[in-house]
Length: 175
Image (cartoon, rainbow, N blue to C red):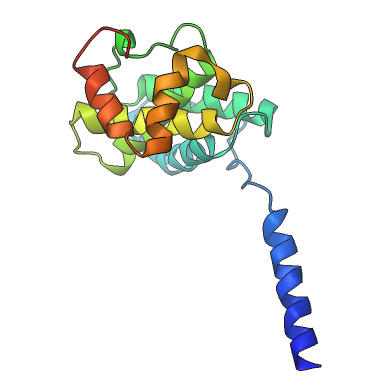
């Protein structure tokens, strides 16, 4: 009887884990105004949580909420006095053709910068952006087959995104 109970509980727990839903997007304020440094600081935690959600949630899940969350964090990032990102789109082959991926790249860089406020290392910032793009694209039927991502996804599968990033930053040629 004891073995039956343990087996049943184990199967129930496995069933729950298999069908687990990704986390929900943090609650974004309906109205927000950022006019001062204090205004930006006040919403920094929500922005950070929202960036984490955007970086971890596969495309196609909560599409409408993803769009709202993206607009919210991009607007915050655009005016934030504490976060500055310099992105050379010559290094990012998909920047123009696939805005969703480019936004994910920005999210990855911004999240890294928020978690490492003193970081100035371009390699680490770009690496985090490329890693987020690779993780999300690998989960997408559409993006995983995209020509511009072939080399990035290959590097991701081999655990060599940092090498890919280093090569991209050291050349303006396509990798």
